Amino acid sequence: MATDVHRPVTPAVPTGSAVHVEGLTRSFDGRAVIDDLRLDVRPGEFVALLGRSGCGKSTLLRILAGLDRDIEGTVLVPRRKAVAFQSPRLMPWKKVWRNVLLGLPGKPERDVAERALDEVGLSHRASAWPKTLSGGEAQRASLARALVREPDLLLLDEPFGALDALTRIKAQRLVGELWQRRGCAVLLVTHDVEEAVLLADRVLVMDGGVIAYETRVDLERPRDLTDPRFAELRAELLRRLGVDDTAPSEAEKQPAA
Ligand SMILES: Nc1ncnc2c1ncn2[C@@H]1O[C@H](COP(=O)(O)OP(=O)(O)O)[C@@H](O)[C@H]1O
Ligand SMILES: [Mg+2]
Image (cartoon, rainbow, N blue to C red; front, side):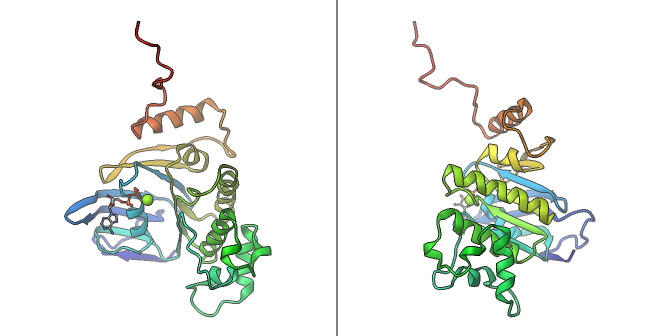
């Protein structure tokens, strides 16, 4: 696997690693949003990243994608990587299949785009204009644009955040299938604890500029939301995020005698 090195401190890529981050610091206006962070992801591993809004998840993802190089520390990532964001970011003046090929080197043929669109169940919309797509379709087009790069590392920043509940479930299932078929490493940023436990091999919680907590998800796939171990993991992660799901809500509290 070819590796991109951003600002190497230790140039050696540890074997058995798709992502190796060490001593990573990123500051904005003198404030360290990421502060001496360490992270390793194995090839083919599915990792979910949770954390409060504003804790630096997108900043970390952009650094891994090579979109932000104003950093200190070591960041080793595969050369073949792709990213999809919450908003699909399709160019309105290009048909769907051309959007999928956007930015690819060489002059790839339309059938390259169609194969990727087929993988996300969207080949029938190849000739459509982006503005005629539903939210779920646009997000699948964005996924196809990532897949066509044949990434060893797929970076997803809240890709289902703007979808309605049913479309979201379908999109989650699709990502799970694509990951199993492709075997690439995935880093999924999400604010949805259930989504993280449903999809990931390992769930990380970011806080204070570092990975403050992590847990393996040793549950067989497809995962069963009614499994007590699922509920246990979910509750523990909510606690780590500072949300106590066992505390009674105001409405449930007994009025004081
Ligand atoms: N380009 C930037 N300039 C200044 N501050 C930024 C910039 N990008 C992110 N930040 C700040 O860094 C913090 C983390 O942002 P972000 O990574 O987007 O959080 P998250 O994705 O976890 O919600 C926030 O306080 C945000 O305002
Ligand atoms: Mg974000």
